[in-house]
Image 1 (cartoon, rainbow, N blue to C red):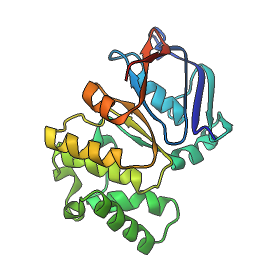
Image 2 (cartoon, rainbow, N blue to C red):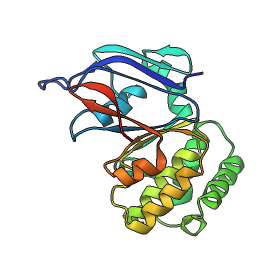
Image 3 (cartoon, rainbow, N blue to C red):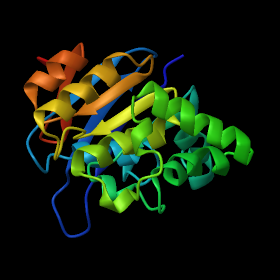
Image 4 (cartoon, rainbow, N blue to C red):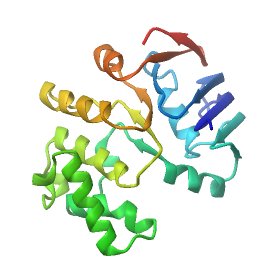
Length: 218
């Protein structure tokens, strides 16, 4: 079953020219797809529309075979598709790393013991156990980025939407992030300004220009 399908999406911010004028894409299980295009083209907006965080003026969002229109329709989508924001500080808000990672599972109704077990598993899988009790806002930019990914993976999503995941990463952390992402089973929809990162992680790309998506070189 197709994970996500955006069809003929139109969107404009109030008082500005349209950024999306008929953009369409689909994401299948296991697929690795990149979105390219100039700054301000609407790539991040498209990800937010996919999760119901913004509403298109025209067009449809279908996720897991069902049309999603109202806020309530997107609750399930946000549980099953994880979004890693461009700025980690938009996503990390608990005092410690462990609390940030446990927040999602607790919110999904897991017990405290189950949530703590998930924290240990995710940090172990990502080789980040040394960050478990650290104060989140004191982490480096690269550490925050990796912890942000851990908070999303703790929700056990079926797909990942990644918005400029290499922002503020040094070469070592970028390589570590790439290694982690390459080893994951989830479908991935990636926005990245780094051609090397896109090429290493995705098999195909769509270019967003003049409000529409066209097939591009990954």
